[in-house]
Image 1 (tube, rainbow, N blue to C red):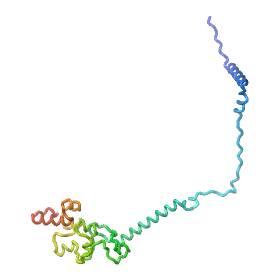
Image 2 (cartoon, rainbow, N blue to C red):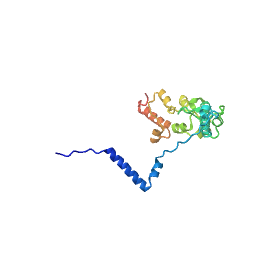
Image 3 (cartoon, rainbow, N blue to C red):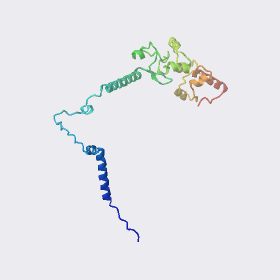
Image 4 (spheres, helix red, strand yellow):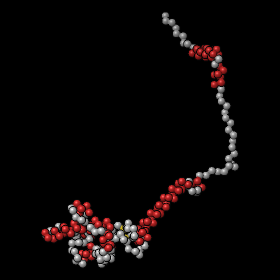
Length: 229
């Protein structure tokens, strides 16, 4: 017959190990230290504070106070710049003269221009041409357009009191091939040409007007009507 297996009593074994460990700790002097570590720390007492008499703290935003000085200064600078930009735009629209060719209304960079420099609307703009015949907006050309599209200098035109704009040059029959080469004006004449300064300079012409004059003269002599729509 086989032997009967006796189940060990785990509770007794556990208690025996505990007693054995306690005896070992006592012999090493660790029992008091373990007792101190196991002692729960005393709870900290908090003194209650009466906040009823203390003033309430509110944020600057809720109180309606202004922003901090640095932010307020930045906002002030931005506001001043915006106001200056609006004033400059208003002055440009009120005082500036619109170029007939590029159709931009601008202040000129001429040093002695009282209209653009002093905002005196009673004075002419020295950065724009003025036709001696029509004295109209058709004769207003800025320095850049005068140079690139007609090959003329502003100083020479300003010194010539009898200068005539391209519109009047054509209407008076002074030069039938010298006319306004603004895109809108070319469309009114049914001239199907793509004109620009780069193309004229690349082809060796002094300006767009010189290129058109040469092309139209050649077309008329050769009987080519493809330039006209």
